[in-house]
Length: 226
Ligand SMILES: Cc1cc2nc3c(=O)[nH]c(=O)nc-3n(C[C@H](O)[C@H](O)[C@H](O)COP(=O)(O)OP(=O)(O)OC[C@H]3O[C@@H](n4cnc5c(N)ncnc54)[C@H](O)[C@@H]3O)c2cc1C
Image 1 (cartoon, rainbow, N blue to C red):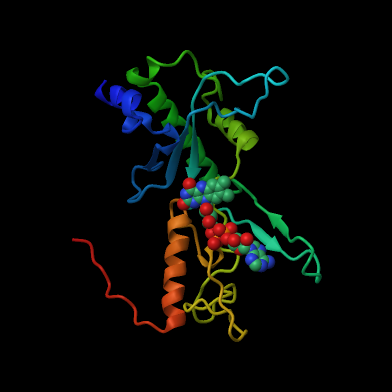
Image 2: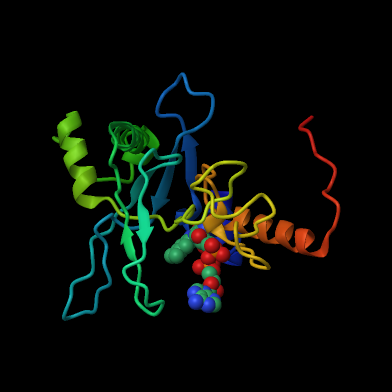
């Protein structure tokens, strides 16, 4: 209640924050030592789309959650379409190509459902819109995931960093393109794999590190957790 009053009168505090900021890092497999699924909550139903009254009706009130595998096994690919550099490349996304990735999303849907079925949340809801309360089997949830999966905009690894004889590595640990002089790549494409979360901050860290490498600065002393 104090938070609601604070939001109403001052426009600050927890209740003034758009709930899109809420997310959770959870384990789809209890035996795992780190989270493997990110739950991204949103303040609109999953099927919400831009509307323009009276031509296109507003979507109904609602909220949702998008379970996202953090370290998917699935690998997409970016290939050249032609030797002409002005031609767009061929991008193959390949979502949910492995059983493990699909299981993580399925478990994430069940976890989101469990959260939304807690009494505190049930007090604010009328009914589940999607996938629908009768959709409970693995096959039902897999079909829903396949029909509705989309990106959360963290593409990376198309130009990965690697060492030694790794023939799939494009840049070395100094971010230099192997076999090309005076050329470095400094962006998300050099990450060898997903970091297990949103990638904007890691991209900034890569850029800071690249600046130090280019300036020839000595590495900072390692920091160990207390
Ligand atoms: C809609 C959306 C929401 C996101 N939300 C989040 C979030 O909440 N949290 C988070 O951590 N991350 C988020 N991300 C991801 C994150 O912002 C990006 O993954 C990250 O910025 C990628 O950084 P980058 O340097 O690899 O690429 P970019 O930031 O895309 O930088 C590439 C740069 O290269 C330039 N460029 C392209 N082609 C050429 C060329 N031929 N010559 C010269 N320059 C060129 C582009 O203009 C651009 O400035 C989001 C991404 C999107 C799209």
